[in-house]
Image 1: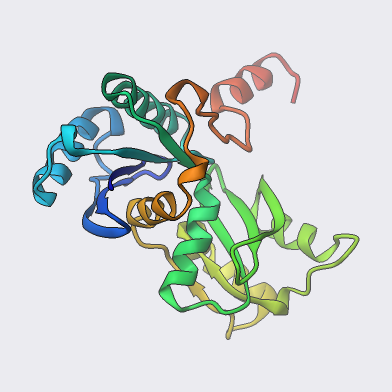
Image 2 (image 1 turned 60 degrees about the vertical axis):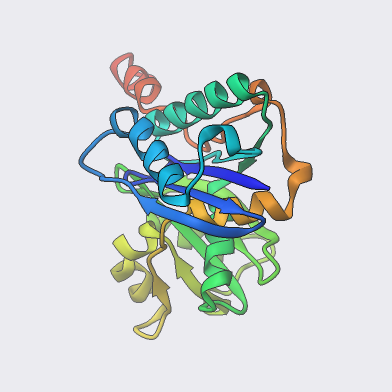
Length: 236
């Protein structure tokens, strides 16, 4: 089975082509160029590097959010267009779940993993997963210190010291805040491109595939345009 996977939820994004769970090619994009401008060329390049044509693709996979609102819309539209044209299904993978899987694949985490995506505006998209990839604390969007305070104050409190790894570009960006809260020995790591991980997840879980019109983006936070409108109207 040949799988084409996209991640447009992060600024650089990535594209991967895999066959039966083995990644043939994966590449990150240029963060200085928008997804809309570069995605067609990135997809064509990835397929070419893998020695395939779009007609050879059997399944599509997509990082379904949270992440960049505009990037996510571009990714969904691209995958839907390809899927409708070829009569293919799509496996939508939550981006934070993909980050947790990438952390597990890296061998850096054996217990609880806190995945943090840079949500811009001084916030992170954050969630906690166990070693089996199961969600322990649901995704949320907040400032880093707010996230840590909320996790500590839960009814069934999370001991921050029990978190084995903070993983993702949000963790790398706010490493100082994490180390201030947990101490200098806290484990923090940035994440690699996610498209390859998403392709492997799609191959392992084909039952998650849906028709292209059934893709439901995961936003967690309302779009910036809506938040700005509320501020202008004095509702925040």
